[in-house]
Length: 439
Image 1 (cartoon, rainbow, N blue to C red):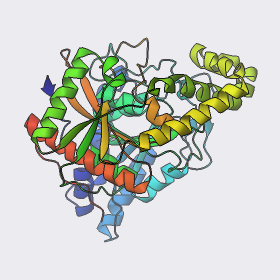
Image 2 (image 1 turned 90 degrees about the vertical axis):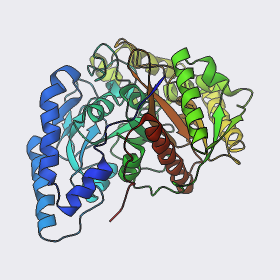
Image 3 (image 1 turned 180 degrees about the vertical axis):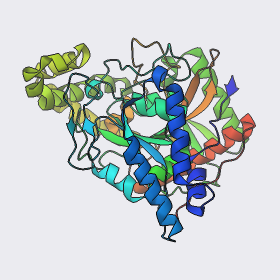
């Protein structure tokens, strides 16, 4: 099994060059636009590109640098925004070509924060319709006959191509982690409730998490504004087997064995952590929450405009409309119990480790299998996904790390992720990456 490390052009490195004046923000942007020109026709990652607006943003940051003003930590970094998240002046169409797409009156707070810290908002990336599992037009840059995953399809594909250096996605089941894994990039699903969902189209509000996608874990930390802790200390990693091995392909199991052996050789302590006895029950309860909440939010619009709702989101809404209140409440109780049982297993380890997906990217008739990600969306635990290997077909496979909820847990998780990323890069013979820095 061949270990894999992403390219060296990173947000961490490029932002340092931009702040120092070694490279202009306009040059960084034009390089991304060149990659869009080269590959967008086949990959189809974008809904709309704000060409002139992005150039104005980049030129303004360059002018601020020449004037001696302090630049933000992600100054000049081109970022794509998933098409369920509002961007001032750009339409939000929710991944639905039939929808009129209203121009947003303001940035969603998570977008406004990126601008404040210096990001150049390049445009809107493709989402699956309503962030559910109906398939998108986007293709996987590694193999155009494979899915990029969903629902943050365009965000992952654009980052993988270098069309932008970072992107925002969202996850209700596995919509950040799975596309990141399929496209050979990194993704961060934060602690539930820790980031604003204002200006973000809901799918299931008690499960929705906005978060970034980027090439490396250090880039994710910079985008998420989380200062990693303990990056120099070998971590203790709790491997979760059982369910996560039973549903993984032989190639994914081999990749996990290889990468965890590599981490142990680098100094990590790898221990096995048992799953709760009824762990697999999460799937039905997770679906009940999604269906009920999607129906509550979308039922009126679906009644008025059924042509805008493709078959799979229609089925989800119908299932939610038929769900009994007792089943919804049982799902909420199960979530509370699952969270406590998983928290009880975290002392003694710095992070859990699982495959990021059961396999490499499947064909375009599906967005792939989210079952390895949905438990953490249900429980609200933060996760980081990073690429670790290529399968026999040359497609990327990813590792999912799971941390303790909360700011301290996220900082610790990023520390583990950066340490693991560095160990994999060394074993793959790739250059070391600079650590994320804040001016």
